[in-house]
Amino acid sequence: MASRHVVAAADEIPPGGRKIVNVRGRQIGVFNLGGEFFALINVCPHQGAKLCEGAILSQLVSDGPGDYRLERQGEMIRCPWHCWEFDIRTGQSWCEPNDVKAKTYNVTVEPGGTLAKGPFKAETLAVAVERDYVIVEM
Amino acid sequence: MSASEAMARAASTVGAIDCDLHPAVPNAQALMPYMDEYWREHMLRRGLDSENYDLMAFPPAAPINVRPDWKPQTGLPGSSLAVLQAQALDPLGVSFAICNVLHGAQAVMSEDLSAALCRGVNNWVAGELLDRDPRLRASILVPQHSGELAAEEIERLAGDKRFVQVLMLAMAELPPGRRQMWPIYRAAEKHGLPIGLHAGSTFRHPLSAAGWGSTLLEDYVSYAQGMSAALNSLLVEGVFQKFPDLKVVLIESGVTWLPASMWRVNKTWRGVRSEVPWLNRLPADIIRERVRLTAQPLDAMDGEALGRVLDQLGSDDMLLFASDYPHWHYDGSDPVPPGIPPAMLKKMMVDNPRATYSRL
Image (tube, rainbow over all chains, first blue to last red; front, side, top):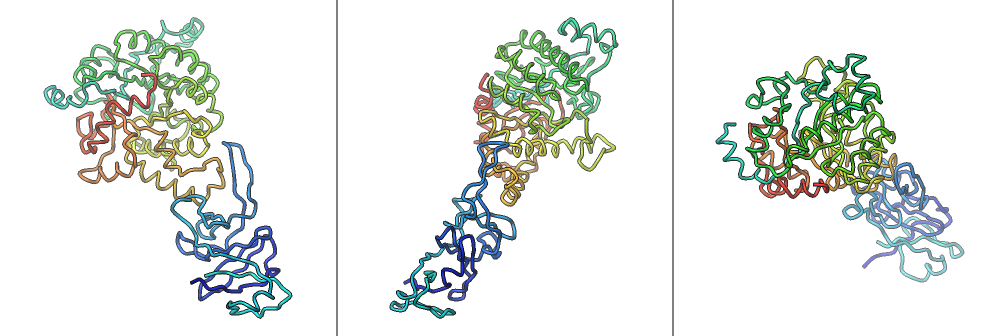
């Protein structure tokens, strides 16, 4: 059964921000996309680079040569090694959406008061009742 | 290949569609009756009627450009219809053959003279070949350094369904994907004409990206690199997206360089595709759908290696049978190269050409 890990206070990761955390010996990148939190493993499925430390970018869209548009700004992560791009929400590779995927983890945000009651693992954080916390399930 | 060998071999070429046959205009004088009045006098005034318009890329005296058994006693190889019928069409038993006349008309510097000469050659093809043998079809020569004039020539001839393709040389002033060339593709797509990109050059640049070579050997080997660069240009500039019904046929390209080239463009695209957001699918998948190749020469390796390389193409739809008459770039002496997997071989004789050339 998945265990739940408190990895950050919600206000530590502002919209557009990220935090690399350690959960059970694994590095996870936690991202805030406009108030929604997502988590990806910090390992590129291509050749193992630290995926979540790459540039956070938009999706480039075009209807044809000479047409250039940005969509879903700030929702793509580009691997620092070979520039493969992944959807932060789903882990899906832009180039090989059917075959290549970065592992994702469920993320929730819960008030400190709730956490104080239930079972959770706060390996590195002290939880204060008045703050909200980011929980990663693994 | 002896006549008897040709007959034995002919089993699979009977009824086939030869997608690359090279008739030759005997000389510039033969073109004169087919030129517009103005340009006929222009040719006479400048003495251009006594020039030869051989492409430097295909020096007719070079052994590589005519098979010994196809060498005529007089005149340019491919310049006699009767000889061409006797040496290629009849023994192979093809149902159709697509004439790709390689001619300096496409390479001369003046865009207007180039256009006039291309009109002359195309008229000559219709009058001297298409009118005289119902098996023959042809590619439209276009003044490819002028997208506008090239498109005009396509429009002029599009009503004649015996013209089934537009012919361009792979290496010219500009990489073929550049937007200045798009009027050609717009006209070709409109009329269901594939673009036949033939190995060769209009000699505006060195044939090798490393600079001018000293020998025909270097030039000839470099044509495969030029073809690869031309294909990448079409792909990356978005010609296949802009013209969704356009097909491209790589003629005399050598074929076996393509799998490695596809792998390389796929790999690089994954990392730098942000340059070309319209290229929104694996480049190799676009190539498999839209690009075809004449199968002579194949630059075949021996034994199972060829099967493996052709397997890497990833499609049985891509190869088109071609005699390449009268050239001698052969792998062996059989116009059907040995070692092609049976399923691919079967499709390349008729089905693939028919799917490629909708006007046949």
